[in-house]
Structures are given as structure tokens and as C-alpha cells.
Length: 261
Image (cartoon, rainbow, N blue to C red; front, side, top):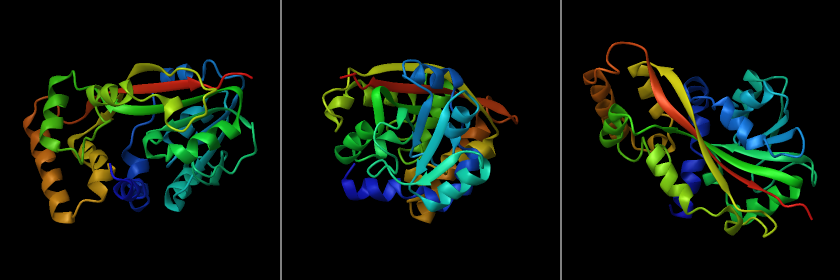
């Protein structure tokens, strides 16, 4: 994605902050535990925290969590939902925390938006020795036939390059975090995926897909046509046409550890 296009997509979520908070899924607790299992302590930064989907899972665990989010509307939703969590304005490229102040940095569906040439050294700066950086992504399990069919009719704007298990595995297979701006003292990345799911109706799933960045920046006639195709598919598919169903998801995790010096 071209840098200007990426910036437009990355900054698109604020206008849909309430819908994002209402319709995006949380993260599989087992995935969060795996992301943190080698962290040297409980201090966790949720970076690019959005409306707090990952923050909430962290806050319900033993983590001492702080959230950082650049978009004011998203940050307001996070603070409304999780008033007891310390939530700060800031970005991956300018983290408002002291050096070596956290034991882990987690990013939920956000790592691919970071300018890692700038964010990598910033993340390394705030991490304590032995600290963990982990990206988490909720992806649809396209091994399920109706999910694969939904991907075909939806188009890339609604189901993009990291939104299914197949596309996420392809995107992360060649992503070497130490080569994306992190200093050389980081170890080799580790990858894992964990079963997850979200209860949806057809209308709720249409609303969820409408919060994708590609959909948010699409001209309204094209957006309406794309959502119409998705709605028609869900209405004609036995698994999704009869009321509430479980959207089969996986939480994929890419984890890397800062080596002790």
C-alpha cells in the first residue's frame, strides 16, 4: 500500500469509533496469554489501542496496562468503556512513556499501520530488557466454506490482505520484525494462532465489515453496493440466514523478544 493511501486508511477509524466499539470482536484470551508468557513483568502497553478491544482483555488479567491511541474519537470510546485504565494520546511513532517502562508492547489489529522505521526504535526504547513485542490480529477462518464464499463476494475493501487465516499467514510468513525497524537486539519472531469466535447476526456482520478501513474510505455508492452484495450473500446462505450464528475467527499472534544485554 502506498504511504499516502496507508495514512488515509489508518486515520479513517475515528469517524466510525462508536460502530467500531459496538461491532469489532475482542481477542482470544489464550492468544493474549501466549503473547505475554515470556514477558519479564506485568507492565503492558496496548499500542494503537483503538476503542479498547484488546485493552479490556488485558485489564481483566493480572496485567498492569496502559493504553496509547492517536485518534481522539477512538480514545474517547476507550476511556468511556474502561474508565479505570490509564489511556493516553500518542502514537507508535511517538510513545508518551519513559525508557524501559513496560515489559510488553501489544498491538491489536494495529501493527501493520505503524511506520516501523520510526516506531521500531520507539518500541525498543520503552521496552525493558527481555521485553516482548506482539502483534495480534483477529482473522476469519476461511477453511469454513461459507466464510470462503463471503470473502469472494465481499471484495478486498471489506475483507483485506490480513483478514482471513490464509491471507494473514501469507502476510506474516515473510514479515521479519527485526528487519522492519526494530534494532538488531531483537530475536526471531514466533507465530501462533488460537481459535476464537464472535456471535453475530447477518445485520451485525454487515455492520462489522462496514468498519474495515477500506470500506470507511470508499465512496458512498460503492460502499452501499458492496454492503448490499454481502447482505444478499448472508441472506442466501443457510449458516447465516436463520438468525444468530458464530463467526469463526482465529486470533493470530506474531511475537518477538528484545534480548537482554
